[in-house]
Length: 217
Image 1 (cartoon, rainbow, N blue to C red):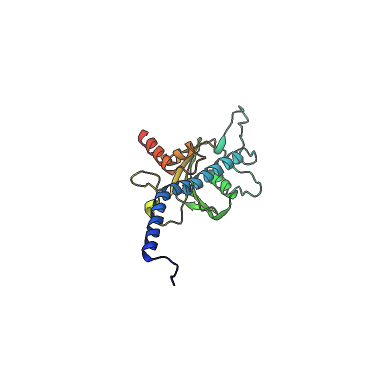
Image 2: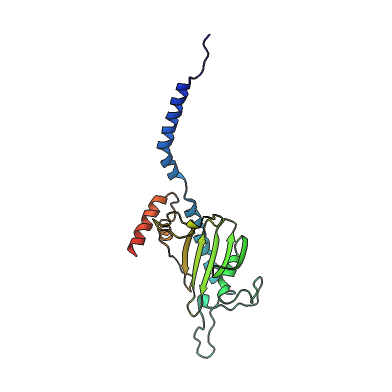
């Protein structure tokens, strides 16, 4: 009586065929997966843009004060860094260069912070992004914002912004905000993301675009 089944040779041939099919299909499947870092970057950027407008448009938080003698404004935008006595904001904590980043952090779901760190105010949100705000004061405030999209990765080699040779898979991205809340990307990969914000499957194209932007500087 013959037994039904596969011989070892047939199994090896089948496994080889599966391996070939997988090797051919893998690049296409990878292209179908969204770029996690770009997804986190765009989510953080949109959160930053939305909340910045909300905060600066809130006249109880930011208002233009005027000189009583000549009627000229004495401060505009983030340079209006005094804080009124309103809940839930403490005027001692939410004032000076700490004012905007601490108000911003108060509107997010945090796992730690805000606190001093990285030369400014640092905090981490529940989506796994670490934010660092470094604010320069004066009449025209400028804020440098670092997004660490993989803060739990201890591999220090990744703690850098995009460079094709030195840092092809960055964890950190840099944004800059002006006194009126205008936001620009500093690093070339962040700039490439913002030029193609809705396509989250464009890792290869974004890196090519970043290389072109870096070469043009």
